[in-house]
Length: 87
Image 1 (cartoon, helix red, strand yellow):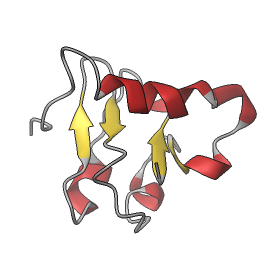
Image 2 (cartoon, rainbow, N blue to C red; image 1 turned 120 degrees about the vertical axis):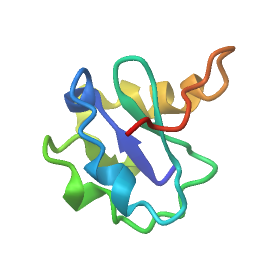
Image 3 (cartoon, rainbow, N blue to C red; image 1 turned 60 degrees about the horizontal axis):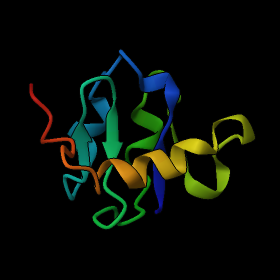
Image 4 (spheres, rainbow, N blue to C red; image 1 turned 90 degrees about the vertical axis):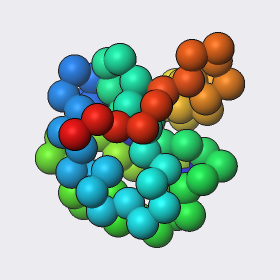
């Protein structure tokens, strides 16, 4: 999984990252956005656009937020995966 969205996105969902993603791999859940691990091409376009610094390359996720690597993976395996962002 190249990029991960962490807790700073919760209840914010700014979506500036969605606008710059060239492969539309960012999805919207009820409380935050998620990056699909199999669709992300590791381009990094989303990271600098995030106004709350919620997006990190998976290897750079701060230690206290490492659980979000698994959360981003698991949400797409759930019975109710996130959908395309609304505008």
